[in-house]
Length: 234
Image (cartoon, rainbow, N blue to C red):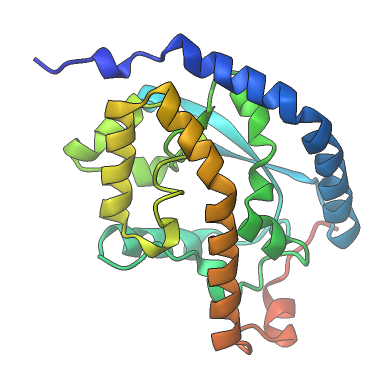
């Protein structure tokens, strides 16, 4: 019989989430206000975006993010990109790594720095997420998981995690799964603290990687292309 001991959410995890958010709030709250204002002044539509995700033990919830795309942008392309990554050994490179005309002017910075995920602190406060854990996946992604991959749902989804500080976009989908499951099996206070401390350096590396990719293909998205796919609310 499968040992479910590692499935239980430890009390220290919730305590760590609350203390960390309380300490960071004086910085994060003003920053969030500035980001929301920048989104509203550079594009039409709400500054928040919500999307159904799959979390702990397969429970679904509405995950919050700062909106980084023009309202009405198509998502079929992203779904196809993700499916290709799941079926291959290619690195988990985001679609917007070399340019994406669907992204608003401030969106690239928000996405590369991870600041677009700040609203997920609300999900953490609600108990739907934690600061540390596997990223909450999309329903159509979860439907394609193999039986052994389902074990990643034994951990509460997080803003950052073992995969994010272990190479992230330089790793494959299979390696991401292995790291997520490793975390689900071995999570402890010391590991969470180490992951939190490594998150900012990991984000800096990610931002550097994206700048290098952009330099390699500077003309991928032209103004004409951007206008052809830009869809905003009237």
